[in-house]
Amino acid sequence: EKKEGEEAEKKEGTEEEAAAKEGEEKKEEAAEEAAGDADDAKKDGKEKKKGWWPFGGKDKDGEGAEKDGEEKEEKEEKAGDEKEDDKDGDDKDGESKKKKDKKKKKEKTKKVCTMKEEKRVRRVALQVAAETPDIKPFNATQITATKKVLREYDEREAKIRERASAFNALESYIYVTKEKLEDSEELKAVTTAETREKFTEQLTAMSGWLDEDGWEATTEVLTDKLNEMKLVGDPMFFRMKQTMERPEAVAKAREMIVAVEGAVANLTKKMSWLNESHTQIVTNKTAFLAEWLDNMTAAQEATPPHEDPAFTAEEVYRKFPAIEDAMKRLQRVPKPAPPKKEKKEKKKKDENATDDEEGKAEAGEEKEEKEGEEKEKEEKEGAEEAETKEEETVKETESEL
Image 1 (cartoon, helix red, strand yellow):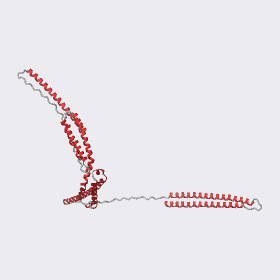
Image 2 (cartoon, one colour):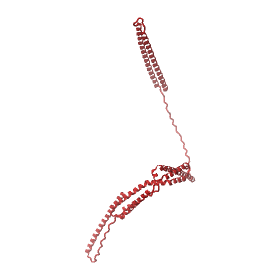
Image 3 (tube, one colour):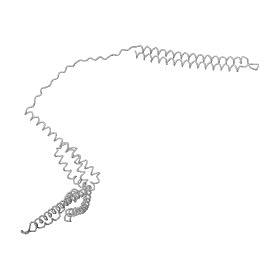
Image 4 (cartoon, one colour):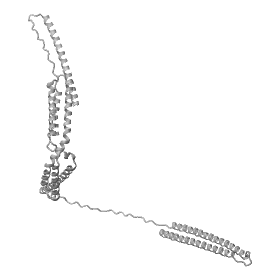
């Protein structure tokens, strides 16, 4: 019913539009007719004005004709205006009628009742039945057989992974090495143009073999091919690495020598009992390291860069632990104990001495024993103070190092 109402409204709208168009066309036609009649009347009046009178002067009929033409024009204009007013009124009446019809149809559509379809739910209890299979445990033979199958599967998978890793290692080594030979300035500094060209040719040949026959090659063959390439490429990369790391190692070694010499000077000030025999444990090794560095750097400058280096950064770093151990031993040198005083020998007394003399002698001995005990306490306290001072100096030197 709603759809029918909408369709009826659409039809009425189209009819109203058509009626409005027809009314406009009629208005235009009436206006054109009125304009044409007015033009004709004007022409007739002009012709009458121009009428000929044989006796001269103005024609009376011509004057009357002019008046009649003017009256006709006025009447026609009034008639056209009345027609237009009638048409406008008709149009307004038509529009009001259409509005009333629309309101009536809307009221009709509102009065229509519609029934909504209600969804009905019906609930039913489902019956479920589960079946569990009877699983029997494996016996000893079945367990061994399954373990064997799993072991074989693991071995096969391990072989596949090993071959894939070997293939990827060879392929990546080829691409990385070719890129470094073309772009790395550090690698060009430690190699010649001839060696780079030969090695690039070997790498291109190896990449071609890898694309054609490498897919079917075994793990052993792939590892052998990689080792062949490394025999040529690893020395180049080693020289490049040493040119980058060796100057830094030499600089650190010289800084260590200066720091150790300063620490030894501070120790000799704080630990006054240290002499040259003690400090030579450290100074001899620092002097040896300085001399060795001078000789090795001179030898390295003499060797061309595309040959094996005269010394490596690892050799420099291996010299450090000996100096550190010597410095620790120097810090642990104890302070020498003060010399012990000789006890006074007791004089033998005569057997014939009197009791008074013996009492005096015993009192003197007691005094001497007390004095000796006090001196021993003072010596122990001095030794403890010296040990604490030594520990403080050791900690300070370790922090400085």
